[in-house]
Image 1 (cartoon, rainbow, N blue to C red):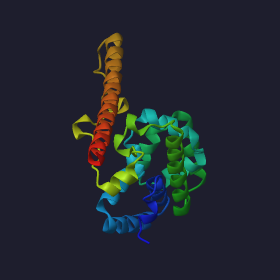
Image 2: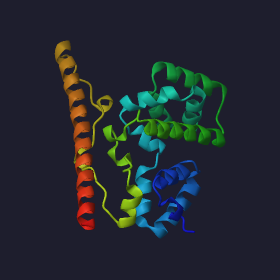
Image 3: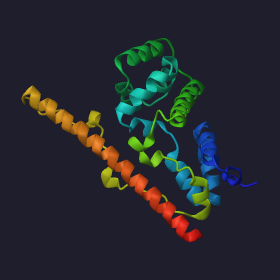
Length: 227
């Protein structure tokens, strides 16, 4: 049987994502190469939606604040302890005060092994996928490329194109925006911050509308082909 044949059924794409996300880096690349040899389209769509630490660190901190409290401090510490210094520092900046202190306390006592780091990363990925399944984490609000259409297996089989969010509409997280200029009145600074939050909100809504519009267009194209 081919690498992707068993995953062509409804729900198979998620199963394949889970398989690849829960394997080591070398094995991941081996799987992706095998998929690419069978279907470049499958490989492209799988790779686009794979969870990685770099991808998680690029997300709006507002949404990360919903994820990290569901992860035990020990497991977060295993993730942080296995990262290169610059990425570890970036990760720690996202944690709230309590989470950061707990992680630091764990790392004072223990240096994680590669296996422990891998287990921590897998737990983080697993929790994100669980939140996605529950509907408590909606990728369309902050990373539309991670959204998996319900009929993705059918669309891949028929060669139907997927929506692409224009790169010019990439969300800018409020947490990554520069602070208001020094010396301006506090009420003006507060108003500027509110306007920035509104900008992020409108950008998110624009992403969702674009995605929904493209989904409807793809469905219409399918209906026309059947008719």
